[in-house]
Length: 208
Length: 413
Image: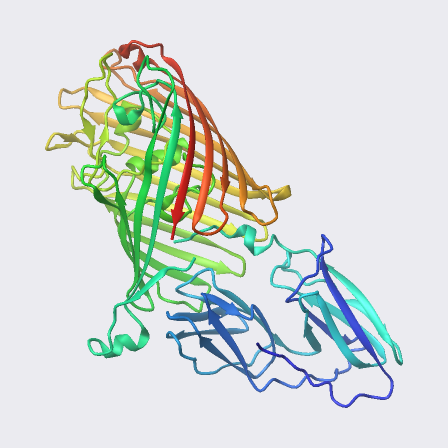
């Protein structure tokens, strides 16, 4: 189990919490969405500090976790728990690499310097897919099973809020939403994402 | 799917390779048991002009039959990071040899960190035409019997050669252009001329044959076709274009095939037929998660008999299939398909031989229950209405309707 913790820094005296609920067009909670908050006036945010490192596991020919959130400069290790090899690669603009991971071994670290979205595949097993969201500016958080992201202790001010998900129907960026955080208390916001058909329905039962 | 896994490499024999875990072999298999209620139209497997796999005996009325629908074993070795293989063996009592090969090929696909990826395939394989046969062992997840188009592909079209593909990828889709040079498919098209279209689920194994329909009332055997013979020693060619996009929720496939056979060539009594076709397929998700598949094919086959007789026919077929799950868990699937097909005699010297014109259509309705990856229970109603003048020579009217009800239990691993 991987726990991603972004240190918020010392909490300022006037700060509020922001709770963002992500739903699909049917109203169902959406997990694995990345919500980013940025100060609307363009001033630099409380920067999230990079994780020491991240490991992505390969088990039962599936990447775990499906979506990871890191800051630029974080090294990522690929851990193969399967009894067979995986050939991890990406041709995404933010990071192009390929690395072979024999059964029951861990790869060397791969560092993701550039912000952006990196789609990870396996050259042997086409259906394996993982996403790494490499954060640039702003403060990101990943939605949980209930589709909830929490930003605790945001300094009062106006923020612009944006959301991303691997199954977003349009490749265009969702227009950001402005939200005001008060001196104290909790602000809640709901974002509806138009998603592609769940992967399960697309998947053919067997692919050569 | 959790395959049975065997690791053959040993540390002592191949230390360098064994560290990486190659070679590795995945074994899959499928067994299908069938019960069929059919009418009395003799099926094409019994030298009849019926359109379904399981036919009856004329005058006997409806009958209940069944047995083994399919028994297949798939060996999928991985030789290294970039190369693998695929061997599909089929076991069948009625085959010329009980165990025979359906597909056998090796693949080479190095990883690419650019949007373009190139791959190579060599051996014997189906040209990419079918959008239906995407399940294990070239089966369809939608119905038991395949469309007329893909029944023919399974029965008489196989390429032995090398296929090259270049795919331009982006997140959620891509475009693939490809093609193959092949041998060993010179008799392709014979069955469409001699028997016409059929709807079934029987692939012809590489060394097997297909019976020719009788043209007499006593159903005397007229011989058979060995579809995967090389007769004129000239290679054939096919080109493909495939595009798929998750945002659009669709896939498009275009195939142009020509076996470039010398239509006058004969070897060991087997004749070559110059056969070419264009095929297009499109799949798309409609509202309410209903999957739509449609394919169209048009082609021509020609043979110059040693007597100088020219046999020439054009063939056309299309289908539309709608399929969807009834339940949230996607265990219960309903599919409905409409097929339309025809064969037109293009003989420049008519009046010789058996008439071969044909026109027909078919409705297929199937329900499948797949409680998990290993088990599938299906029920299918198939009704084919067709008019083929050649039936007159067997003492029945040209227009016939074939009806079958099939149930199948399938175990896959």
